[in-house]
Image 1 (cartoon, rainbow over the protein chains, first blue to last red):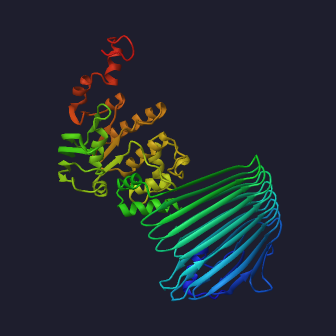
Image 2: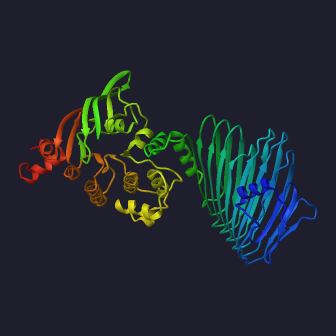
Length: 308
Length: 251
């Protein structure tokens, strides 16, 4: 049975849209301890022997099942590094929902560094959703440094949706992926920073097999005095296709550095990058004002749409 | 009813003051469709932007239903009942057609209502309602969505800045029908369209000709249209009557 307080429940809703115990397999971690765990016939969740995290094993051929592994932290001053390894069997088709919510009302920094490794089997399909959220009015920082490693076998596909909209003071996200032939990786990152927050997002995607493809797209908004760095590098080592895009809005005194990188080591590698940074276009605001919105309401609508 | 009294507007260019609108006074009466026409650069779009509040006059006053709105913002004017369809509609990443229609309507709008507005501008609602108002839409599609937002607002004054610009021939036929429909249901509202198109001029109650920032002519369609010598419509008219021998020849 889950033992969660009201703040933890609210965090769970923010990061995993969970109002109650999820269907399917789950592992809920609260303040550094397991608050609930459930395995199904096809999805086995077990703690690592050294206690550093969990292993999630999904049987080959598992279809239309989901795994939720949210983390919530409400103690100020807690710092943890957790290693979660996902072994996704051949031909499986699953949804994995991760996410971390930190509520820090105290003076000390709270930090969760989740290192996720995905071993995606042949022809398997994975949809991965990860949301990060912070709240609390303490002076301690809310810090999240996720590391994601993806190893994709032939003809597998993975769609990753990573969202961090509010309240995380400091993030250094590193994502690496290695794709064999026919594997397909799609990343959609949405990020908003405000106050004096700092967010760094680094991708290194290696397209190693013929027909592998990657599409890494980040949409972000930097408000107030916040800073973001988006560093996405695609390496084409075979006849493959890759696209990376950084599309950003800056507001107030926000700053963004976009560093798109492409490396083609094969004549038939087709790689594209796009990057655009700018403030909200004045005519967008004017258009919405002619519909009766105030300037501030117009800005909110434009940003909500942009990050939707 | 919208009234402009002695409105002037200018811009500074290379430290020189260039006046675009000179001391214009005009009225858009209730329940009338008024078309503003005239050569390019004559000040038509500037006039529309002055009415919507996007720019403010250097001198003169603007009244809506007797109330001085000269100092009011775009938002305040919109709330008072002025709608404005841009000549070049704006694109928004992530905002869907139904979102824009909801914002225009200013409240709840179910899919069936949204479909009604989209159908009225000749778009198959099912295909468009969830589309993003971004670069994936063609200029013509965007233009029709822009007009649908004005329909959704249902305000007392609708201003259209060259609705035909960027629209293909097939869509144009549809557009005329939209304006004919609006003309039929004009009760309680008025419409101002900036246009060069003869077929739009033909459905006008009143026509105003703006040239070099001044009113060159103003009156009922019957009074003004025959005087539009040299315009595309007049040339076409005289070609029909055989006065001009070749296309484009002055008559």
